[in-house]
Length: 312
Image (tube, rainbow, N blue to C red; front, side, top):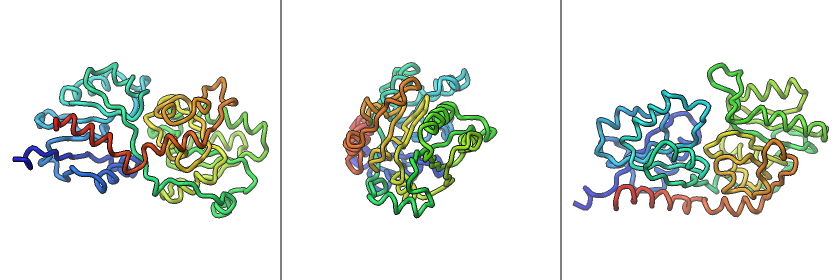
């Protein structure tokens, strides 16, 4: 009887070689309860809602359902998207968001319980490395450059030309153009897919850059440790995980007030386009806050959420 009443959690896949897949794998390796078989699950975590067929919920409405929502881009949240959300909402028992900013967005569309829990971060992947000069030599980056990083996609997948405005790549270009006027040693370090918009604008404005399209987590950790500054310029965000990754690697970072940034970064590190020059990184503040969410401690709030929703 106890076995029948125990929580058996199934987590859907993104299958995009993206952060969600890594987080899912980390959960499976480090936590119970979990089942790899959807049919045997009595709780479903829709961690990747864009990959989930909502009709499956209607057919299996007896399961408890937790659905993650990372952000709502109001510019794209049209009538069709609202209808899709409302249909799924009938079967969702609770929502999970990773920032209080997103909680405020989701609250407009549902009266279900919403848990705001930032994702955990793995300190075995993200950590500081002392020898910056050696790392720059390894990646053929000028040692004396003022190196600014941006590791998130900036271009719409529909045409690989148009800027993904939610990520603020136009803002990023505006900022680095201003910084170029003040430093001839400015150099931009890019990583990740769909960087066509920023690359085209860097070339157009004769701004030096180095680009690594796809790297391993180990390499990305080293790239963070090469930087003098990481800049998040997004208009809308779920995380971004770059906030945690920068914080844990002790990479100086400034950010717009999006996603989890105000929960991890010092208020002095947040900016808008009218005051970005006055924003100041606070490495120790960010490092201290991010450490509250490192594994295994970062799993505790998720386990508590699942048990509350399941009713144990």
